[in-house]
Length: 253
Image (cartoon, rainbow, N blue to C red; front, side, top):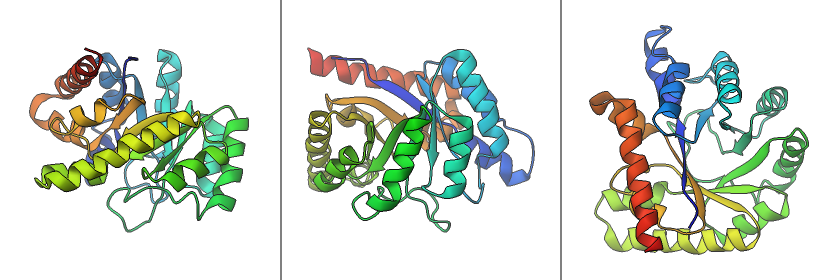
């Protein structure tokens, strides 16, 4: 079974920086540490209200990832502004996500079926610019099929509901959601899509997700940045990497 990649989202390093209006802690330094600790790529979400990551951060992260030969996964809303930024910077990957200004974090997956006419042209423009286009969606058959139809190369399945249920001890609900993730990953792979997953994953929930054989990448951020307060970022990433590798080895055995 192929190695499962780890993308580290460093948005909330910028959240801490911006809380004081300071210049530190620096997202660039966090990205450098993450790559040194074993991250396979860096994820950053430039929001319309610039609540954490800034345009300058994206410039610095783009240069770092190009220099290190590592992918930058640019999470973005499907807006003219964000599309223009992505087309100018041409990140390795552009992950289209839903975004509402009042939300604390991304809540649920992108509705590709309802937004087909709006999303499809953005996908084609990003692909033409050389970015690998990913859609952050629920593990829903219609959303997965539509993602393939409009030309996305990757889908990232939303794991937040599973992680919330597992942490709450709602075993039956968690297992039902995990089953949907398994079925969705298999469907996406059968349609020729590369399959990623992310949102809400921590040390306690990563193993069941990592054992889904079709997954090629997990994107994890908030938990790792929070855990870094207590153990350091490198230690947190290394432990997550070890748990992912152990889960893969268990399935392969």
